[in-house]
Image (cartoon, one colour):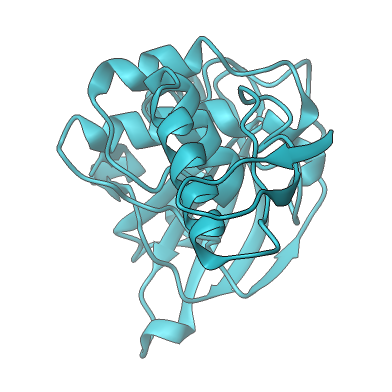
Length: 238
């Protein structure tokens, strides 16, 4: 959509090209005025004012869509609102677990970014059964990992990572190394190395409800861990 955009403080109207900010967001005109700098400032101001009028759940989803994570601290009801607004779109396949993760830390007044856990990964194939278990939030994944039905995987973890004390618990993304198990719980048990960049981890995937299996060894630098290991390789939310 193209047209004339009258700019406050400008002597002439600037040519304005209108686009949508995001496919799933409310339409917000963004453009450039080709004549004077005040036009550009005015257009940006109008776009910002319209954006702030969006429901906070939509603003949170926009934040996630733009950055691939939630970068700000929102009022707690905004997270619940956002979870109810997630579009049925492949581009949002990992949004629910990311927003649930952000809500977990928002309750503690913090914004925590869960980064990609490793630089190198060497994995083995795992036969999965059925659809990914729901929910796949860190808390739900930990609860199923600690359940009696998963004792075999915990014993395997003790053998593979006897010195692990930290973990990253998340849902597999639709892109990247673990895309074939997208939506399933991933648990990376981290063993400290002689230096931060030499840490190692054993990665387990939930192959069926409450049943985890080893899927990969990883090495690199692991940041933003969100769980700790106790006796018997039981996980606890950090």
